[in-house]
Length: 150
Image 1 (tube, one colour):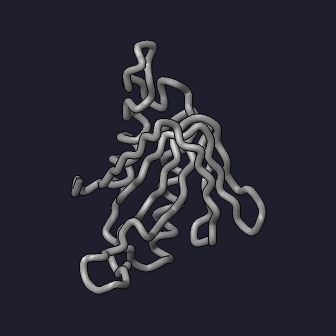
Image 2 (spheres, helix red, strand yellow):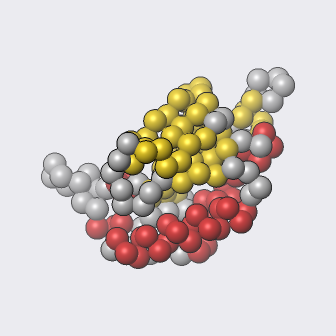
Image 3 (cartoon, one colour):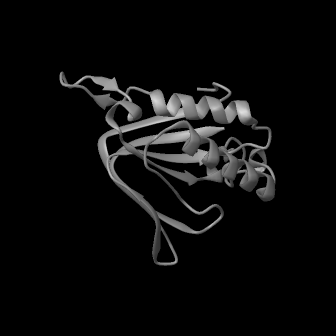
């Protein structure tokens, strides 16, 4: 499982002209799900995301987590995080696995993250053509991989 985390002042997802999810200050998560991902991968990404100290304290040091500041989170599925661009000119997305299996895992991830924190969490729409609006804060952008590839 892979995630791109962006610290934001606000973020929203629009599908067919309708906002389906929006947040204020917090984290925007683009989430990629691999065919072999398990509940353990979900748990790793959730725990790491909620507890990463990427928000400033009173001394302007990144020393506070999303939970510490009571921030919000927007989770957006993004299978292209598993795009393999090493060969040729067209990315291969075979590591993403079948769409139906990824949908089940995405829905389970959403359930688990809602159960893990008492903060506002919004979601994109799996498989939809989404417009994601991000007002970055910093900018601060971090990459997570449950297999610890980076």
